[in-house]
Length: 194
Picture 1 (tube, rainbow, N blue to C red):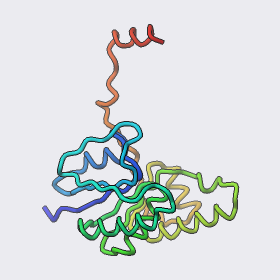
Picture 2 (cartoon, rainbow, N blue to C red):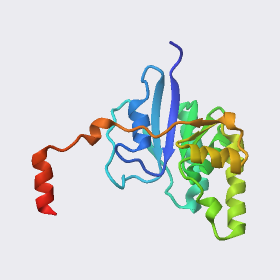
Picture 3 (cartoon, rainbow, N blue to C red):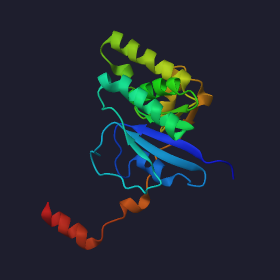
């Protein structure tokens, strides 16, 4: 087996059992060392639980005004941790990730494109053009773009001109055991309660 690939997941927040948490916990430990970087300390639903093997960082907060400082902090983490891949999640994180990988070009940028057509539906044509222009810079710089649905893949390739070969369609995974069916007594209790 070859050298372990270091992948840093970057998002504002991560919750237990969300798609980012699933990536962090389920990555093959023989092939990947996965770290996590967030801009918000607290989870907004339930905090994920990781072993000491999962390095974690928190950088400058989620406001766009903090983005330049976040990019510098993120680049420092990429350099010091020797990250091979930065996997960003959502728009602002992708922009910060682009800046960080420009400051530390050894790390390859992978963009997780989770939103669909929100930018295309903006009322302001100026804001729409500006945000799409920035997004196009990110798309061109990304080594890969991960889309969770055929609709988002179509937006990227059909509406925004991203080369289809650059887009990987990977639907969100879920853990079936989290959704075990309640027993009959629990159903009766809940029905009585409501």
